[in-house]
Amino acid sequence: MPFLADGLAAGEAVVLACREENSALLAEALGHDDRIVVLPREGIYTRTAHVIATLRRVVRRQLVAGASGVRLLGEIPVDQSGDEWHEWHRCEAISNVALGPLPLSSVCAFDRRALSDAICEGVEETHPALMTPAGPVPNHRYVDPATVLRRTPTTRAGRAEDTPPTLQLADLADASRLPELRARVRAALDGSGEPGQLRGRFAAAVAEVLLNALRHGRPPVVVRLWATPTRLECTVTDRGDGFDDPLAGYTPPGNGFPPAGAGLWLVRQACDTLEVFRTGTGFAVRLATGLPGSDAPPTPSSAAAPADTPAARADRARADARELARRLGEQL
Image (cartoon, rainbow, N blue to C red):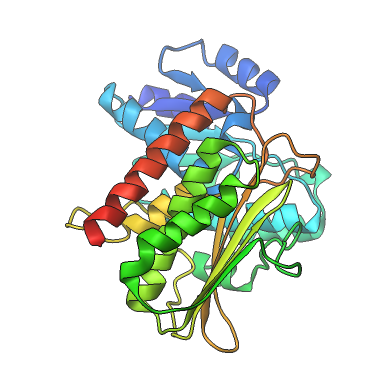
């Protein structure tokens, strides 16, 4: 409470992203100040790129409205199963870099009594300070975010890569073929029966990654695409060294032309997950998107959120696809 009350006293806005009942109690205790923003937790904590983009928008809006800064109290929904926790562990590490430059002070609330020792250790290594009754104190167990990402396994649940692909494009080397290749990816997705906005967004994301591989990687480039009832997945591989920055694409692009990092930033917005890794023969990028309405268990990257309405998802999908298509058109 003092953390939030002190923020209001200093002219900052307060953002609550907790369980509904907890947000209501906190807002009441703080006097229902007009500068208190209550966000539905289920509408924010869906996937890492969405968390980052949403909180950046919230902070910008509060600054435009006259706040000197923002104080956030969030309750991350912790599922202690291995794959889901690993994804949230990565999200917490990434947030330190992607949100660090903003005038944002945040506290992540966890009930230690309900968490295993391993989860508690993971929470501590992704937070540079710990809140105590006397206020925040430096956390000497904090670990550099890039180190956390490199050693934390990515989610393997639901991967389709051990099955025959829906489409495979091999021995690619000519960037001028990109419009044709993108059309083939889109045609494969069109035949899968997936929602139109998801097809367009995913095809545009694959095309952006493919363009990067053709321009900056080492041929031959290979694209493997899977369209299953629960998931869209694609890997783009080349024989080059790639890059070794696990945080790439999580911070907004620069102001140059073309904006540095805009491609990966947009691809992360367009997909549920994007992973980059080295293989025995080169470099690979894996993109994946969970499909709404499937019977597959939800993950932090694909769970549908009540506040994340179909109309809103469709609008974002169309905007993302248009922006990716525009970028591709400028670069060809």
